[in-house]
Image (cartoon, rainbow, N blue to C red; front, side, top):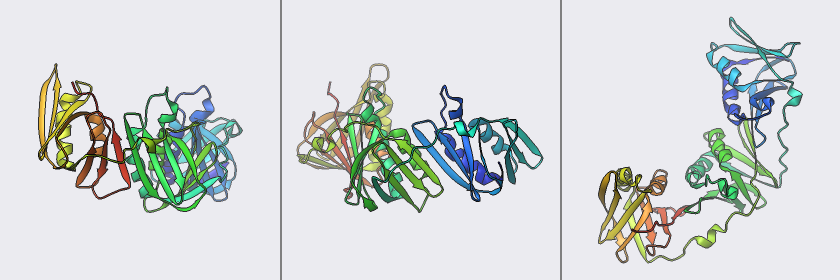
Length: 365
């Protein structure tokens, strides 16, 4: 194989797919990037048997073929090359040659036929979604995905597809996020659970101002954005019935200014982090009082003016969980709906009905 491509294009491709390279594996080939010519393009692939990334760059193909090269090594080398064309070629002894300007490297590759093929994703369900909407939805839900490997089903995000509508759902049993996204050209309906790592990578490949094509088969999902493709396995199992746990009625409602609330919570959290993040909320008249106590630090007290409907109430929440949602809300105020000190609270951005955050309270001392 012999190709010539721009250093910038090659570096972008290597950096894109390298995130799927396995860092810990007994198979050396999984630490490599496979490069293969296709017409006047060079296709780069990395795959750790769970997530695969593929990116295509323009190239002048002088001799078609394929090669593999260690991902970390090629990334380090290309990043130091001058900004001019790079020639990639294979040598009879199995080495991969990289030339750029006066630089000349020969790196030990592995047989490309040993590189595992990316799985084919059959078109059982497919749709298109605006990339900015998808990134927003992931950002507003990914933080609630569980990290507890004993409940694997919750370490992924539920994609509920149907009727030109996509729901992104995540929960760790202490909180629940639901974000509604409009989609187009939807064919079929399905519930698919995608590993959190894959969804995080989707936010990186989704290009600005474009659309992401999504195809789902019974065991795999494929995202295509521009010249980049991500394929991930799906998590098998039944996601909890999240709709059943969302209360439909509340007897108290607060309108809380987002930024003032976030500032107060960040200050209170300094103390709360030393006591399991417990922060007490006292709602009386038009004031939300936040307090936290720690035997090793002391006490924090903050007040935020709110608009209240319903009776006064005292309850406690995890400060970090509150800050997580305040960090992604983009409205000037939030609506906080409550029923009692042991009932879940519902947080929504004021004036928007496409996002909700359900949070279980902590026990009051």
